[in-house]
Image 1: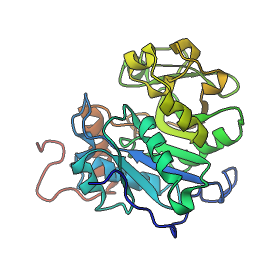
Image 2: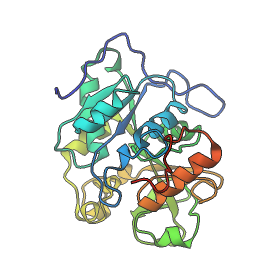
Image 3: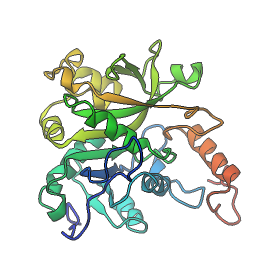
Image 4: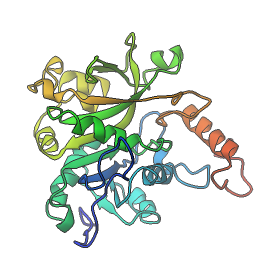
Length: 294
């Protein structure tokens, strides 16, 4: 299979739906969903389908509720590519040497420069493939945080920490935000006063070029946090422009009752399936119990 699918020049650029307080509809932005097959704590999680749909398709539908226009799935997996073509018209086959989703987004950004209507895109939005419950307006809020801060090169999302168990959980990434809405620390370790990070990023295109040229530092590797690339405190050469802007999502998102952000463990997925059942939003596989099927 070739490295990238052909994108016809007639395709319109993705844009944020117009509404008060959101970026204008002509904001040149493309949404990408990096999707790798293997994961440590929940193997092959993007292909789990106990709701009748794969987790990746749930994430795709969640993104569809946030943007108008094409959404690109980026993967280096044959299995994910075949599944993704069933529901997405835009699947890009990336090379296998990307270390994280931001590197995949950078690879896609280089491709878009040759893809007709996408040559002039200013922003790339990256939604992690295990984010099936993004609230409406999440992507717009992330883009807005970036656009309003000209010195920032990247923005991301956060929500309040639901409880002390989440604060202690290394699977929950914490972010400490200053009074100006900029991140001053990310970690998997507990941080007093931290928010819960949400796996959505918006980048200026030039930043992705820089990111792809920059080697990861020790803390990025140790904690497995791609957003630490280039930070001076991570042994990097970037200045304060490296620190992301952070849009804080209000409300109870992230609690067990309302639905969390990110599916990282078997327990996360079990609760997600329960929420799908309770809301009666998705078809459950006929004749099987989605909570006990193997």
